[in-house]
Length: 128
Image 1 (cartoon, rainbow, N blue to C red):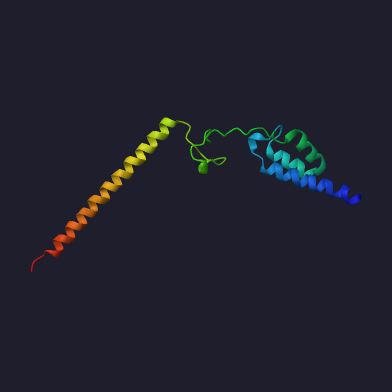
Image 2 (cartoon, rainbow, N blue to C red):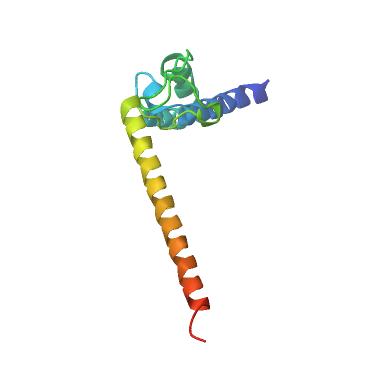
């Protein structure tokens, strides 16, 4: 029985400490995340009970952050915290510029390759 009275606060403190550390800053209630961690570390049993009662984030459906995608077009990219454009028009404009730049680079590469072939042909037909 003494072991149970000794282990329960330790296990509870470790559980609450890990949960406090791994929770998002904006979801923690009443105190900042750092203060909850300090409270749990210095007062393990009381801090843990207080964390469970008042500080732990409510586990409702998680709202996406300000720069996260709300609808998934590509599930492989749908990870929490991943940046996504908030203005589809600006996103399309950016992609258009990327395509134009890529096409310009391809055109320059083809032109350079054509010049290289003409230069090789001119060297082969040199004076005899």
